[in-house]
Amino acid sequence: MPEAQVVLPFKQGQKILEVGGGDIPVFRPNLDFRKLPTVDYVGDLEEVWPIEDTSFDGIFGKFCIEHVSWRKTQHFANECFRILSPGGIAIMISPNTLEQCKEVARTGRIDIEESAMLFGGQEEHGWNEHKAAFSPEYATKLFKNAGFENVEIETWPGQIWTGARTDMIIKAFKRENKTESGFTNQKWYQDLNNNLNSQVEKVKLNIGSFTVMSKDNWVNADILDLSSYAGQNGYKFKQFDATKGIPYKNNEVDLIITSHFMEHITRQEGTQFLKECFRVMKPNGIIRIAVPNMKLITQYYLEDASFKNTFKENEGVKNSEDITEAYWNFITAGHKTAYDEDSLGKKMKEVGFIEVNKSLFGQSRSPEIKSETKDMFEDHSLYMEAVKPNIEIHSSASDNRVELYQQYLLGLINEGKQ
Image 1 (tube, rainbow, N blue to C red):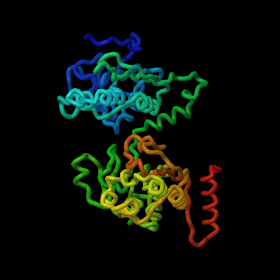
Image 2 (cartoon, helix red, strand yellow; image 1 turned 90 degrees about the horizontal axis):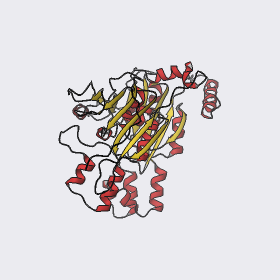
Image 3 (cartoon, helix red, strand yellow; image 1 turned 90 degrees about the vertical axis):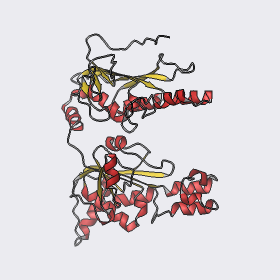
Image 4 (cartoon, helix red, strand yellow; image 1 turned 180 degrees about the horizontal axis):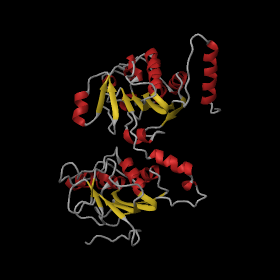
């Protein structure tokens, strides 16, 4: 049966880039990581593409984006937006993983065909396996987060599995430039956009990383010597004890994340750790902290009879006799303290951070944190973010009036009045 035809919204004379076209591209030029006669730009789609900003009118990819790591799909969408001219369109043909799963559930069958559909052909190791899953809602979210004004999803009429259409077409539209009175032509917007696209590499720390490390030039840090693990897997790593200080200069670090670390140190050590984070961070730098949410965990214990099932992978819970012992073993497993939103937020404000807010799993006010790092334990974690203010505050132990005035100013900042 011949494959169904789809009319693409590109116009004659437009510059169209195909991504991941391999040896049978529909359009030229073609960007692919393989050095083939049909490849015009050789580059890794999970890294910065070797293409200038706003240089193409359209981007096309057929069964390409699912071969990009799920950690990098947001970066992929961001790169599409970057290289498209205003008014440009990105067209991606992709598996609809949600529909694939529904079909597997409906047929009640898992065999070699289902494995190939879900995980890719894998004839060539390293590039022909599926690394990411998609639904219309998730694809829309990715491309809108990248800046596209409108995203449309259609069913792909081509490949059919057991009578079901399990693939989709993603159409993402970049906004056209406004007139001279519009904001996109104003100098402040252009300057901001230039700053956002600056190639100056940010200093990014993942403190208490253990093996949950991040790439993209994040420096992963832990008290344990994990340099061998980091080297084997392509991570940057620095060993130090964060309770003894952070080996960076004042105002040197742009971003800090720390996940399920602060509950393993005392409250006093936690305060000193936050002070060190504040010291090394640049003004306007962002910190993201994840800890067990004590209030939420206690609610599980009080209201949910399936507490043991919820945390069944925890060794202490697994080996407990009843729910009470499971609760005790869980909250004391190597932990020296506990936090909820109020207690952690108060501590972050006390050391000087502003805009202290609870965040959601997988979300962040920082694009780098959101797209380059991984949140842990969605079912019981508290995620808090804050910003270092863009002011210098100098303390004076000999003059209590200065300290009180500083606290007054920080109070105004936290309330949004300054």
